[in-house]
Image (tube, rainbow, N blue to C red; front, side, top):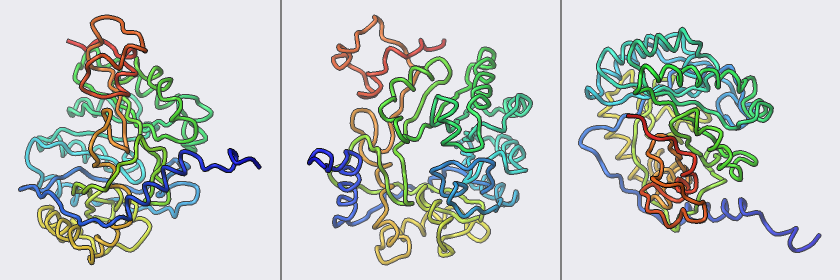
Length: 357
């Protein structure tokens, strides 16, 4: 075997470097907001797919089937300040919650904009029309490949054509309802990091934006990063309510709560969101607390790293709903074009659609 063949891959070097940065001495401090920062609800663990990377319903996952009680969803929504956006997702798929539509209806009736995340396999036109009638305007779909066969290998049990049909339907409805926003999440698995430009071209005429995400594995770790920070930064405490009622401070604890006993976290059945926020901030800053011990080894802090070339180590976003350049620009000239959103966005400038009036 040659020395070249023995050399570690870029991905392996990247992962090792991130482990070292995470393990370096660090004193956690949280920037506390006067009012709790609430992200949203993961209302069910049930999902009809078995995605290869999923810690909740993947091929090697311990599958569970908790669903959050409707009264606890309403209890949480009523504590969120009027007008603030509420996200509905799931550690399964939101639309496997039999109360999903009721949650959306109650939340919009209480004056909150709603953002829905789904794999898009269970959204027939009649369901979409019901959501649009409620005032739901923000949709995001998890789609990790643009080839049907590869998509099916990643999102086991799903069909690319079904989610494309849903997206096409919303695109058509956008002609009458101009504020519909449709976006896609794409986790960088396999060859997808090398094909981001191709993927962006595919989605440019279909959605408003695509978000490329680094791949997480082994609960706490990441690979296929966009860059590795030189030093660790603090996380942002942002509340999520899980199907068990557990209130977590971040995405990472959603995974940890599925894998381990986290009964030490607050629960919406017995704790207000504000009290939960205050408690979680205190625990984050205490390295001897249960949360502090978890945070010390966790790499999800990269979600909150400073932006470089328009994105964090964790994510790059390409938007197609911003104005196109005034003149056609050659790809080789793009780095000289002043743009506020970063290198990847500049590289994909030719895929942008003109903004709508």
